[in-house]
Amino acid sequence: MKKLSQQIEELNSNLSTQLSPEVIDTFGKSIHDLKTKNMEENSIRVGEKFPDFILFNADNQIINLTDLLKKEKVVIAFFRGNWCPYCNLELKALQENSGKITGKKATLLAISPQKLDYSKELRSNHRLEFELLRDKDNALAKQIGISFQLQDYAIPVYRDLGINLFDFNSNNENELPVPAVFVVDTDQTIIYKFMDSNYMNRLDINELIENL
Image 1 (cartoon, rainbow, N blue to C red):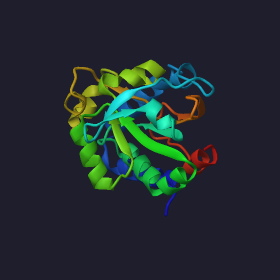
Image 2 (tube, helix red, strand yellow):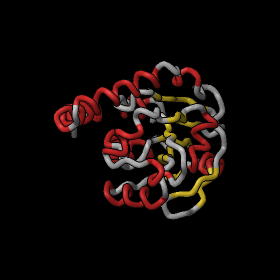
Image 3 (tube, rainbow, N blue to C red):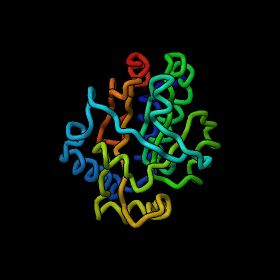
Image 4 (cartoon, rainbow, N blue to C red):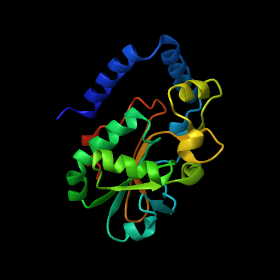
């Protein structure tokens, strides 16, 4: 089984041959501009309390963080949507290691702003066994400081690639969460956080498991 970092390297290599230099440059500028916001430092931090939430899963059932924490720790992975190849790789890697995560007495779930139908499709395509929750209008992502507005110059490039966020997220905002992973202890305290404004960089799954 290849490490997630190796799979991302291969993805980057493939995309470099499939996408035009102009598209690649736009993605790079978008990431650079987002980095200047220093969201990693300005968002919710280790040691702080993760806010309670009530969100719907892919089957339109209510999931409450407080209820989950009564049983065990919770691993929360924010992702952009099923259209994001990097998110797909990360979610598959989490599924492949889900036994190690649950073996450490932790519940795994993933959150995105996309409509439930897309989460159902994603769950089916990758045979994901953990919950996929909808953060409508990025309300929770905004609350913890990981939400951002996609730059105006990047929007047409996304649309040319078939990524119309209006359709995926069912709103009039081009807003996304920065991919981030949190481990929340049973007292609601964050004990681990991985976040990188460069969506091409993802967490080390082994590091996550070591921090459970």
